[in-house]
Length: 232
Image (tube, rainbow, N blue to C red; front, top):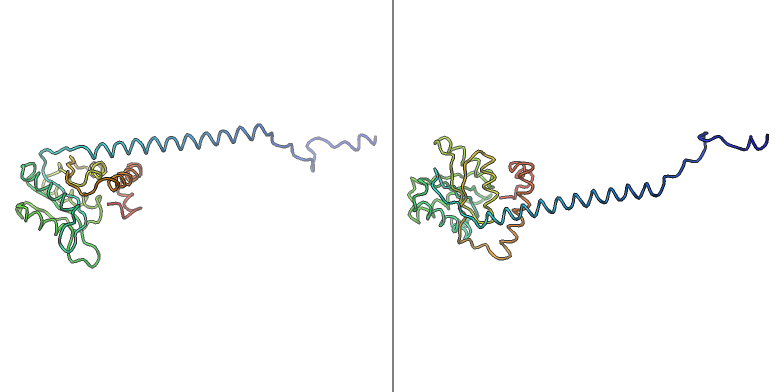
């Protein structure tokens, strides 16, 4: 009887829990590591493929007839276009002179305290290059590429124009084409061939564009701008 009283029933209150088997824990850990590695691999493949697309677009030129040429804005200094903006404008003037479009739209607002807008400086420069003022439209409110194309697209559609030729730097080509598509524009990109951005600086811009495109085409380029107002 004493032996029976000393024996405790299995599962009774106070009985110690059976320890989790070590092989089971190891299987869970291995599975978790594999999931993480697969996730990292997918991100790397996606990012690498996006970089290849951005780079390939930077080497192309889709110059052809369109309803309007849209020049993406860049910095200006006291009414004078920066070298980056001047290179874009020189290319736009050449496309206009070739007769590829009857209208040039220049874009870009002003920085706080600056009396000049990017679009205003760009229009004056183009007129100096021989483009008639009547063939130039100014979009003076935008601070980034999405806003520029959205605003330009609105007033071009009022004129019955939705096919456009986009001018910017080569590294910018893929994203502005994607933004135009998101906005319902039929776009062709003709990057400037005289951009002062090259070498390591161009590679840095290509890397930044890769990140912007990789995120933007998942969440939308309008949301990307709201998340990062510095994306131009």
